[in-house]
Length: 367
Image (cartoon, rainbow, N blue to C red; front, side, top):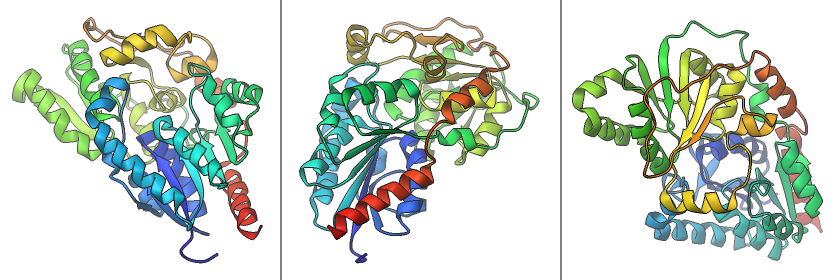
């Protein structure tokens, strides 16, 4: 292929950065790779076109303050997609950008691979019908319940083996070196809303570690700790940046006695590592009100949704409320990690998915 042809990637948060890393590696062997992605995707060969740090947002209330920056980033990615040198799109989660980009790719007759598409099983089911109208879009999903919804809508959808299943995980748990581990989230606004809630819940615990998903969150966490409890709280709560590899993260989680975490893909890693945890989040007011109106799922923590039962405690705290002091983590059944692994181990590997997409790109180029 000519060396100026490229594939556009769009990932807008840390979970997408993890998912996108192996796909970037595979596709960068044949094409240039440009777009949006975090450190993992950039180290794998992605040339960034936008500032990734501005992209992670959670809820409607968090989008508004960043509206103009987000609009500029989207415009730059859309322009790259429309370039004659762009041969295809890999979209990962992040529906605010990716629904529009996938639609535009279809209008341009460019192949689009959408990995972890919108959660239409929870709300906005009409998005599935919209994606079904695009003959150039292929969807890759991790869970059986979302595959069923997209298949029913008429989408070109395939099941993908979740990458966490292949992470080497030692049997049993190591001796607990950390009393409580706090994972308030990878999106800055979400994490800063959750953090006071988490700290109040564990104010009687001594050995507390606060996890920053990225280095740029550390200073924001330090300011919050200093504001809430001064230097004494900074000494009591240790801040650590999350390990970059899934293997290191699982080992880190196994060293904790209890965990409080925001919802998201971290809950899958925690469940697969066999670590007791509770899921807790405080949405912004607008998201909370709209969620109460439109989202009708029984659970919001991914392991509970996948297993279709309440295994891990979960709390959605109203924006005007708080959380009671005390242990927030509950035990888990011994067979949960194995049961979860079995459900996530279905489908194509990421290598197969990348090969199929590369074949589609070559086909389109030669026609």
